[in-house]
Length: 184
Ligand code: FNR
Image 1 (cartoon, helix red, strand yellow):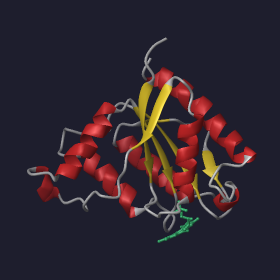
Image 2 (cartoon, rainbow, N blue to C red):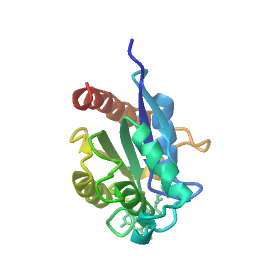
Image 3 (tube, helix red, strand yellow):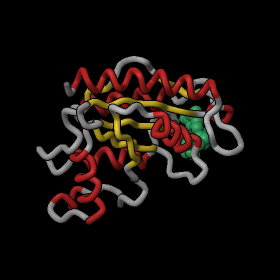
């Protein structure tokens, strides 16, 4: 059997009790043998400034190295004002620079959004997908995964309900296939 593909899981929420972080952890717990999924943190990255392109903070350098080491990316994000949270956009920008050194490029990606609303963070998911096109991340088209009423998808111990596990399993099955298609 070939080595599992390392996948960086990036959570758009910095909130300690984040439901999206619970979903990301559940994905890691359910991940198939072909994927080695681990979280890459974005909360310690200073706000991107183009002046840093010549002299990057150590946290930027580590983050870019983590992206380069990954064979794909899974984004699990809430919606802030119908878009992705600023922390996530900041991380996307940092990984994309300096010019011609885009660390995201050419890898298979996928998006899950989660929200207490019925729309499940649809706006955030599609803004993120739009940016991923520019970053040359091959974003899995299907299955689209929106975790509506996300607060009902975890029990009091933070474990996913059976319904949540089913959604996440369907997503993981699709993503494992997608990784093989994009990086055979
Ligand atoms: C929100 N929230 C929100 N929800 C939504 O469905 N659409 C939206 O546009 C917004 N906008 C928004 C803006 C800001 C600044 C905050 C702080 C929150 C609510 C959001 O979905 C909710 O707080 C989630 O629980 C956040 O996800 P985590 O932190 O639980 O993963």
